[in-house]
Image (tube, rainbow, N blue to C red; front, side, top):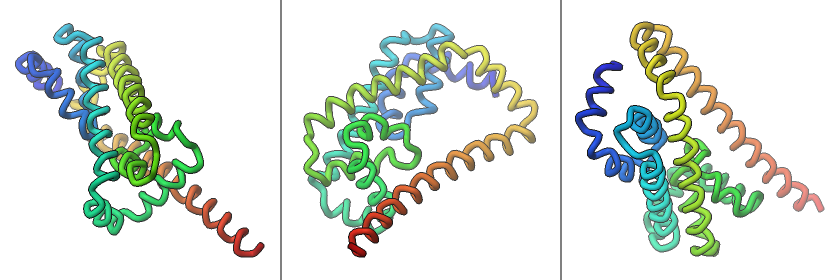
Length: 204
């Protein structure tokens, strides 16, 4: 696996910036890690990789924001399927304000939901764009720099996983299960707080 990945990186590194940009339009964590490894190997410029990845993330979230603001039919369909997530996103925006715009790309399962949810509201498009751009570059810088710094260790981990796949698969599965559980608990807590406030209002 390690040799295949290295061969792929060497053969296609000239397309790295294009791939980074379009991958980060959607979900880009893996792309950022690969970008950091490419920088570690000397195939791409780390500063330009961060710039391109952050710009891709910014454009992606701007698209989601304007879908929420102007495409009501799509949002209506989305709301029917993911009412819970939209409710949580709206409550987080009410509770935390602008920091949620900055942190939304780190919240698992909400990368598209939060920008669309913000777009539905009267939140300033200019303010969202500024915070979103800064957030995109910070997100890209943190992940790419970590992958660049720990490039050798990442290759060692890939080699270990290839040799001990029977242990690696359960470990990776448990990791993602824990992440999923944590964010589900956060969702429940936010919704329960809202229900508690509504109950207090009704009683009074």
